[in-house]
Structure formats: structure tokens, C-alpha cells
Image 1 (cartoon, helix red, strand yellow):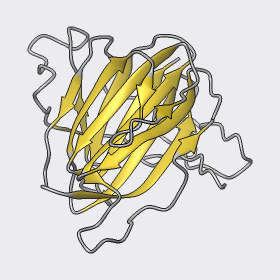
Image 2 (cartoon, helix red, strand yellow):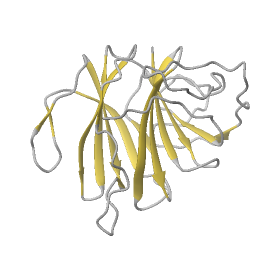
Image 3 (cartoon, one colour):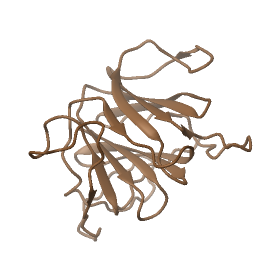
Image 4 (tube, helix red, strand yellow):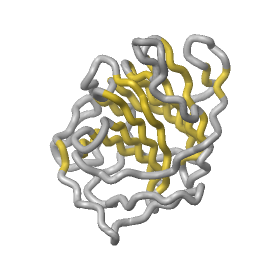
Length: 210
């Protein structure tokens, strides 16, 4: 099973955070922030590590917004059905990253803390997630199944990156246009949620702080 460990340049970024970690007047968990202006990646930008030896793109480490320890964090949908086309993980000097890529737009999504045991949506079969702290991402309208009955994503459904904080990423189900993914962490961590839509396909990015 091939895993892709890479990060992407940041452009057209919206940072979605909950809690009191931002400046005064920061949005609540259910409110999206305005698009932030990001620096252009350059040769001097931080270079994230890759565990499989593949080359990765430089990513600016500034102006991505603060991390928040207050969950849940909510992202509003921009389309009724967002087809998952890619799932990627990568690591940076200060955080680990998960990227979900879609067609058409972004789904309604909630990131929250979770406790095992975990079960697979619909079947009820147990889902094994490594780690000592866990996050659950629920994407309503976010699915790899198209309305034509095909799959938009045929990549891994269980990543074992063993990064500093992110040690596991497992799909917990994809049923009736709703998908669930579990993030297994080495310890409880603060997070940052970013949406990307202006440059390239729509993406939902989750950064987990080291």
C-alpha cells in the first residue's frame, strides 16, 4: 500500500479555529474566518520531513494562524456533496498535517476529541486506532462515493505515519454521503484547521501541534 507524505503550498487560506487562542474578536468554532494572505513559498521556507524518502514541497511556516486546544471545531459546507479524491499526511518541524482533497467544494465538517472503543459506521465492526489521544473528523456530505456509484478515492484508508504527534489516521466509515476519520495521537495536542479553495482543488487541512 503506497502512502504519500507531502505537504502543499499555502494559498487562498482560511483558518478555522475555536476558543480563545486568537486575537480579540476571533471567530467562534462555528464561524469561518476571512481569507488570510500568505507568503509565497521560497527556497528558504521550512522543509517538512518525509518518512518514505519522497521529495516534498517547501511550506511557509508563518501566518497560518494559532493552534487551539478548544474543540470541537466546525467548518461550513460550500457544496452539498464533496467527493474525496485524495488523503495525504506529512510532518513539519512544529506540527503534523493531514490533508483531505475534494472535487466541487468543501463538506460540512466537525473535528472533535473522541474516546475508544470506535466502531465502523453502518457495520458496527471495531475500528483499531493507535495512540493515547484521539480526534474524530466527521464530514457530512464528504464522501469518496460518487452519485454514479464509483469511488473518487482508492488510496489508503489506514495510515501509520508514526510522526511526533500523529501516529495513526484511519477511516471509520463512509456511509450515506458521510465519512468519518480518526486521528490517533501520541498525546493530547492542540490543532489548527485550514481550508484551501482559491488555488487548486478544495482542501481541508488539519495541523496537529508537536
